[in-house]
Amino acid sequence: QKEVEQDPGPLSVPEGAIVSLNCTYSNSAFQYFMWYRQYSRKGPELLMYTYSSGNKEDGRFTAQVDKSSKYISLFIRDSQPSDSATYLCAMSLTQGGSEKLVFGKGMKLTVNP
Amino acid sequence: NAGVTQTPKFRILKIGQSMTLQCAQDMNHNYMYWYRQDPGMGLKLIYYSVGAGITDKGEVPNGYNVSRSTTEDFPLRLELAAPSQTSVYFCASSGGQVLTNEKLFFGSGTQLSVL
Image (cartoon, rainbow over all chains, first blue to last red):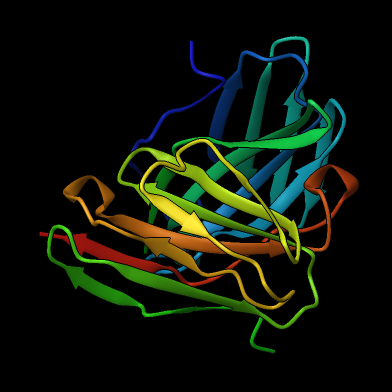
């Protein structure tokens, strides 16, 4: 079982739709959970992060973590064409005194006008 | 604000050739990283550095070398290019560990093809 699983999609939705992106993980030692957004031919940029189980909101974006189920989600409300990008989940833990950061494969999202 | 700058943006190599991918950051970050991104495979860590003079292997270091003589620069060297090294390479930097709430900044990437 891979440490971090993410459905690579692609996902295509109409403008205004609610989008749900998900990742599961197998290692309960992960402590810090992130979502990165990557536009075509660009590097990833941090979108949201959280330490704890529960929800965290930032504008149209909500990050949700369920540590008991080892499941994280990113919800996008009122999706816009500018949200079209690849979304990568990432999570980190401390291993042998160093940090280990693991990325999901990324889900390509297209929001159609 | 330049952030993390990678050069070149694109490169085609022949099998067996060598090259250096350049990475520079102007944020005075101690931590720097090299990742490769293959289609549908996510980001894999090649090498990282926690400060000048200190480097360590990541998940997929074979076929690569790095050096960190200054805080600003972290070049990645391919000695004998192989088709398996065809990928998009990203350099990143941070002020510290992500676990301590430091943000990871990525460059725009170098698209490398080995033919």
